[in-house]
Length: 236
Image (cartoon, rainbow, N blue to C red):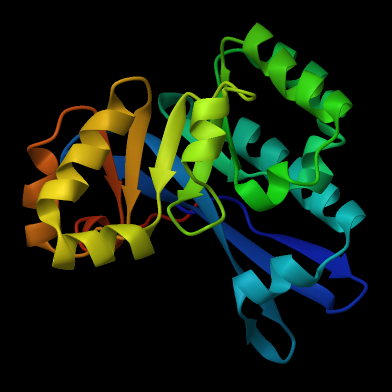
């Protein structure tokens, strides 16, 4: 897929850093896809920073500001109109989500998926849940449950229907474990989840993974196998 515009950001902990966002394909086949997740590499003057460590260490206000910057970068690139772009959405962003409603409303052609996991949901108030339910008023904004099967997201959240998720992302850890130990149960689980949701399986790294998942309806894939098929393109 392609890189998006890079940007500089000042963090209280890390100082000045450069973030390079790119899109990672979510697909049911090698040739066609309609969704992608935005991921970022982070670099300081001292070198590359692990993105997971960086995002877990920044403040709530910094999370909200980076979300705003990424959202504006997505909307500025017309190539993204072809895809539903998914964004990690921590609870700090959820608590400030209403301030982005006008942006969502003014850009109805761009589809955005907000990814939440159990860790995010545990910190939400009734007001926050009402805000999330307001997302249903936007035809171009969706809620995705992230990291299903890691202990961060599970059946309790799915069954409760407290949040109307349109998609469930199965964690690579659960996928790899069941692919090795119990393919029959894995297939049954994915079929069950796919009855009411779009299902995205993370960690698809081999043709064996791909061939197995291709046989199950309503299952999409994300992983390194697509990176080998892609040539990432910088902005013109």
